[in-house]
Length: 133
Image (cartoon, helix red, strand yellow):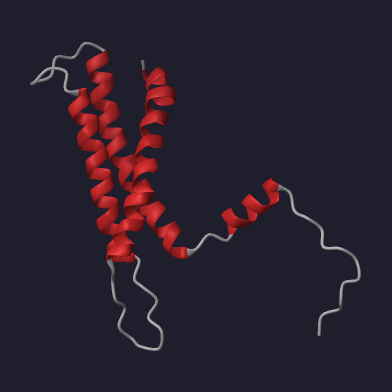
């Protein structure tokens, strides 16, 4: 039996609370973020290669289609993040053995994929691209 505390409970700082939340993230959230991040990094390197090639003056068929490439990148990350999260994040099964899936899993993937796609594009444009030019 735990000992009773006689003093007041120590308030944690904002940083301590966020660090604890980060270390104890729910598995579905970790899976959704990891799947979206893996797809975004892979497709991001393809876009980065295309962007650097155009910046160096390489003439590619179709001309400068960076806006279309960014649009395709974001759509691909969001769709694949939703589908992969739908497949790897089942609902709680309770006492049964069946692991049902739900549109909520896909929504979780969508909400995880949007900021990840943005952050990957920012890191590539602001950090990686200047290093390669």
